[in-house]
View 1 (cartoon, one colour):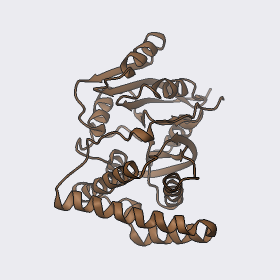
View 2 (view 1 turned 180 degrees about the vertical axis):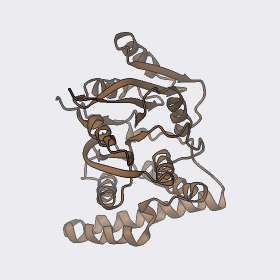
View 3 (view 1 turned 90 degrees about the horizontal axis):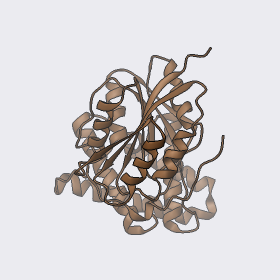
View 4 (view 1 turned 90 degrees about the vertical axis):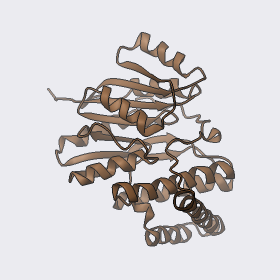
Amino acid sequence: MVERIKCCIGVFAYNEEKNIANILNALLNQKQDYIEIAEIIVVSSASTDGTDEIVKGFCQNNSIIKLIQEDERRGKSAAINLFIKQAKADILVIESADTIPEFDVVEKLVKPFKNKLIGMTGGRPVPENTKETFVGFAVNLLWDLHHEMAMNSPKLGEMVAFRKIFTEIPADSAVDEASIEAIMLEHSYRLVYVSTAIVHNKGPETYNDFIKQRRRIAAGHLWLKDNQEHKVASQDSSLMLTLFIKACIRDPKNIGYVFGVALLEVYCRLLGLYDYKVKKRNPFKWDTIDSAKALNYKGKKK
């Protein structure tokens, strides 16, 4: 008989009534040949729509689902800390409520922890945005580059698993997964990118929303470098330039779009630099991106 690895999943929501049922159904229907999902804890941060009522309905029919309601939004990292304190397993999985994992993602992320040297794993985010618009092309290109980067130097995001070796991450971190990476590396654990663990998400659809999101992430990474002495792979300018050049060679008919995305990314990073260094802003409690909430993916069957 195979000894299954027990894990707890944290889902973090703010006004996610459009997707929360989809993600909970996807998590309840996960493959569990080598793992056991002991708990699914939803942290709802002062939601004002129907999110909490939907989760309560799931709680009535599924004993492993629990709801933590925050009276005030304190940022995702603070919500993660609530989850860590409540979770009873040694392996934790965290996921934003505006994503949908395929049916085998949790198992693929948790199974590697049989190796005691591994501290954190992450899946591959795949956006549902169309490539027919410039913003949709930009979203897809950046996640493709994220994939190429992570294949060589793990940069984990959207849905990750990690060992519960700490009780909290910095509550004022705007880049929670990267903060966990920093802690794991500090304790000499390995990071593993699981490219076959597909997590569906939705990127921004408008220029304003795209810039708002990339600007916030850029400022968050600067905060991370100063406060946790961790530099994510995407902050390597020469690496990013190389990846953009490869994208041009790989897709010459869209070279204009690729060049445009590169310029837009530089612009967003400069805005993030201005926010962090000049305005002294740390966007750990950010406004939601409405155009990134219309995720239509319903999940595949086992």
